Length: 144
Image: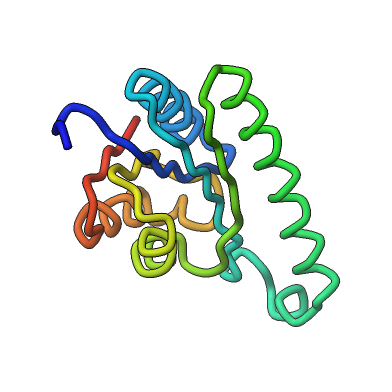
C-alpha cells in the first residue's frame, strides 16, 4: 500500500464541530484515494441516567435516532461521490469500543476523529481522542 493512499477509512461522528471537520476530511480523503468510507457513532451509556439505561424503550429510541442521523451522513458522502459508504452504531465508551471492537470489525487503514466530542466526554477534553491515538492498531488522524 502506498503510505499516501488509504483503501478504507473509518470516521467517528457526533454533532460536535470537530467531528464535522473530521467527517469532511474523511470524505475528501476517501474521494481522493478512491477509498471506502465507514461512519460510526457511539451510543454512550454514560450519557444516560440509571432509569434511562434500564429502559429498553429509551435505549432503542436513542439508537434509532443515531441510525437516522448516520443515514444523513451516509447520504452526504454518497452525494459527494464516495462509491462505498457504510454506517453503524456501536455501544459503550467511544475510545475503547472503537479501538477494541469497531476497528477489528471494519479493518480500516485510517481512523479519522475529532479532537473534542459533543456529549458525555466533553468534560474529559480530548481524552477519547488521546486514547484512540495511543491504542489504535491503525493510523489515527485527529482533526480540530
